Length: 310
Image (cartoon, helix red, strand yellow):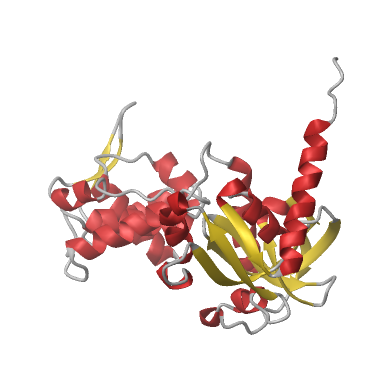
């Protein structure tokens, strides 16, 4: 909307001494002519806009001009700005960038310094560009209600081709998922973005189905009674602090180095248990204990094979 663009432009001018018309045009994806019309609108509304000529010229505001910021306190502005900066580390969001510009324009200089005290970076180490592209594409598909398709590899290594109606992007424990209606299974499914390949938008739109995200429907599916097992594991005393951090004090049996948890059983769980190496031992249920033994034997077989010289 034009009113949002005008407000964002004003905040950008407050934050910076000068902004070139071309920079505004690229930021809002409009023509330079539209930007100059917007500048005229701001001037007519009483905003003291100044044009600087020359190679280093641009558009600015009369020095000292500020907008009334009584709607938010400095602490509130800082908190919201930190949250928005965190969001922008994981995917491109022009709306979030625009809001951030508005908020920083409302802050005093000392409030702007507070933005540097805390920075939450949700992106993986190494700046995973592919993940950022997936999140951005899926966000666009969700907001425009366009189906997406991709190839998906399950935890067992089985590859299927899916088309889904994407409803919700989820970040849980530093891992990104998309929750959507799967047209292959005719039900809602949760897909891990790391297992998605060849993601693209389709030419098919969809009508969004009713989903109450406040109830975390993906958690309900994850913890379905048919999938959950009661897992008891003994752990090395030196590993107690790590176990407490992972599972909480309530999960540790009194006066013992044993943890008891309710958790879904799948390939992820087996890998999770194996990640502890010799620091934990599965006590119950017996079939999971046997499963871990089988996998350990298989690992030994792999490493005992003679490697032929190249």
